[in-house]
Amino acid sequence: MTSSLRLPPPSEPFEILDPASAPAPAYGTASLSDLLPALAAGLGVAPYSGAEPGLLLEPADRVCVFLVDGLGWELLRAHPEYAPFLTSLLGTSLGGTGRPLTAGFPSTTATSLASVGTGLPPGVHGLAGYTVVIPGEDRLMNQLRWQPPVDPHSWQPHPTVFERVQLSGVETCQVTSPLFAQTPLTRVALSGGTFLGRYTGEERMDLAAERLADSDRALVYTYVSELDGMGHRHGVDSDEWRMMLNTVDRLVRRLAEQLPPRSALYVTADHGMIDIAPEDRIDFDEDWELGAGVSLLGGEGRARHVYAVPGAAADVFAVWSEVLGDRMWVATRDQAIEAGWFGPVVEERVYRRIGDVVAAACADVAVTASRTEPNESAMVGLHGSMTPAEQHVPLLEVRGG
Picture (tube, one colour):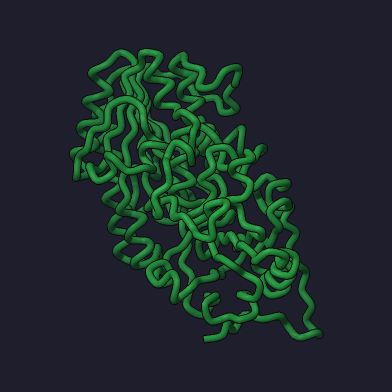
């Protein structure tokens, strides 16, 4: 069906949002890409030559990062009854300031995991969206599923922080699902040290604690994905999501209670989430106006990379701004880069992966694609943009005895 989201009548003019007004992530001081460099510094390791971490955290000899997929800061604060232990830690976030970290842009899993693992912003590691164009080819690459196959280390050539920490003599490992053992995303974002696959959350918590205790200096990473899955399927305003949050709360407590001396646990996330109602979704596949001049639609519902046919980029930008400019920050590629959406630097190999037009939702709206993205279009909970509900994530801290 054709979108009901259209320009107001002339008597009700609106102001198009300035891309520079978008709350770009706090790269360099308080973003996901700053976390592992700060922890590495506390272990006596400089992740990059001459680089000083912009985020300062109290050093610990044994460090565990527990990343909960989809655990947004605002969602956590809104559900204290389902997450009593996590709620009790809110004041410890971001080095005891009680403030959140920011994810990068877009606030999506592949981008965020690469930012965590490499310690680099999206403009450098290059995983700049859920789907992005392969430069020189008229097709999109899904960077979460890594389809179509692209050589991982050509796509993301930078070493991970885990690799650098391991080379320095720190015991390093990832404790997560066995399903992720050989995925390209794991190879480019989380490689380094020992991969230890365990299926249940309880097994992962127990093994993570064991690996911390086994070494004088250790960096352990662990992960659960089920909260994100519940949000996508049922929405964050659902009993299913709330029950899974309670499960996550119990897992964090289980790990925290087993921390050995001289250790620190940091609980964070890759993004938050927001439910978008059916009436607030614009179906790109049924909207001739938004589709005019568009060759490929990348990204996801709340963070779109729009690739124009040759010569049509200016027209596509004008139409998307006119139709969506009061509800989405709509930018040209260069405007988005200048505004710092992808970080202070965008490497040449990454530049063309970014859309000719980039659109990030400010209001409760999403641009879906019912025919070309049926699974994603059916999701209740969405993420990707720079609103606090999506971009702000916790950095909760627990110290071992």
